[in-house]
Image 1 (cartoon, one colour):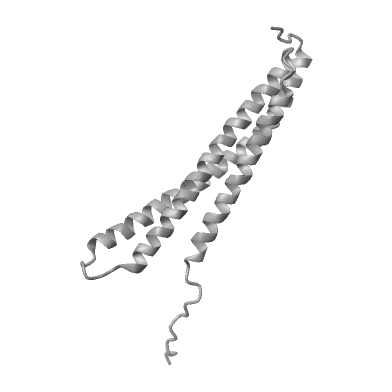
Image 2 (cartoon, rainbow, N blue to C red):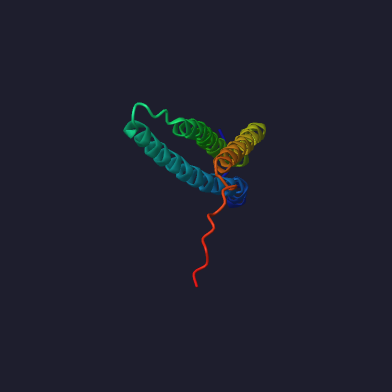
Length: 155
């Protein structure tokens, strides 16, 4: 196996491989955001479960169970999003390695790098769709139609 030893080839390989790192930055930011949403979902589910456990046996807690069901769906979407983002990060990391090795060795692996990159971008787009679906479900359960009670003006 031949590794390039001249500075120009190595520096060009580094430049070529560093470009996908910007996508890794976006993925890391999204993972942080989505993990925060998962924490909020878990916290809310615990509160609802405590209410259900504390309720009287005669109280069916229908709305609480309905909200818990939506929280379960949101949690599944967020978990899928995190899995897709993690797989995206792995694919981009493999892309970086393949680009660098393709530039600094005699290996002809640019097609593999292309497949890694496209797989990573596909996972990123699917993760965005999961994030969108979870956000839509989260805002759908809000009750924007409620009106504030009118209080008489104080003299």
